[in-house]
Length: 302
Ligand SMILES: [Zn+2]
Image (cartoon, rainbow, N blue to C red):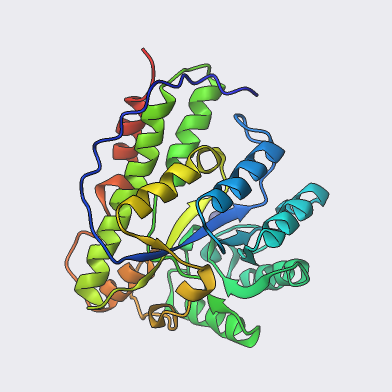
C-alpha cells in the first residue's frame, strides 16, 4: 500500500545535546516479517539493506523468529547475511518464559537453533523476546544453563527503545485512514531513539565508569526502513561511532547475567544498576507509552 503521509520540508534543529566518543552497534529484532499495512516486504527489505549500506553500517545483527521463516523469509535472511550482517536466535515462537515454562521455552530456543544454525553468518547469540528473562531466579538459571550447553551467549541490549511502539501507532493510523507529516514523524522517531541513547550512555558512565560499547535495540519494521539512514546520520553527526555488532558484544558488560530480584526485562545496564540498587529512573521519558503517543499524535494532520 502506498504511504499516504505527506512529506514537508524537514526542520530538524531540535537536537542540540552534543556528546563525543560513544560507540554503538545496530541490532534488529523480529526478522523476518511479512508485509505490513504500510509497506510491502521486498520494499522494506531493500530499504533496510540499502540504508545500512549507505550509512556505513558494516555489520548489524538480526535476531530471528523461526516460525516466521517461510521461503520468502529464508531469502530475506540470506540477503541480510550476504550484505555482511549477522543472524542470531530470538526463539521459534516469540513468547514469554513464564507463560511457557522453562522446559518448553528451552525447547523453543533449540527448535529455532536447528532452523537458523545453517544460515550464513549465523552466530550463537540469544536475545530474549520482550527482553524477558523470566521472573523467578530458577527460570532464569535453567534457561541460562541451557544456553551455556548450546554454547550461546546472551545478546543483551544496552539501549532499550520504544521504536516498536511508535511503529505500531503509525501503522494503526495509516490503516484507519489518518494522514500525517512524514518529516515530523522522522524527527519523533529519531528523538525517541536518541533520548534513550543519551539516557543509557549517562547510566553507563555512572555505573561502569568507562565508555561501553552500546547495542541499540531496533525492530525490522516500516519506520526503520523509512528513517534508518537519517537515524544513523544523526548519531554520527553527534560524534557517535557505529561499530560492528561482533565488536560490541566483546565488551565485558555483556559477559555475565546479573542477579536481579525482580523484573529482568531490561537493558543490561539497568540490570546491572538493579543489582547495585541504583536510584531511579530506569528509563528515559521517550520510552514511555504516553510520551510516545503524545509525540506521535502531534505529527497527525488535523
Ligand atoms: Zn522480539
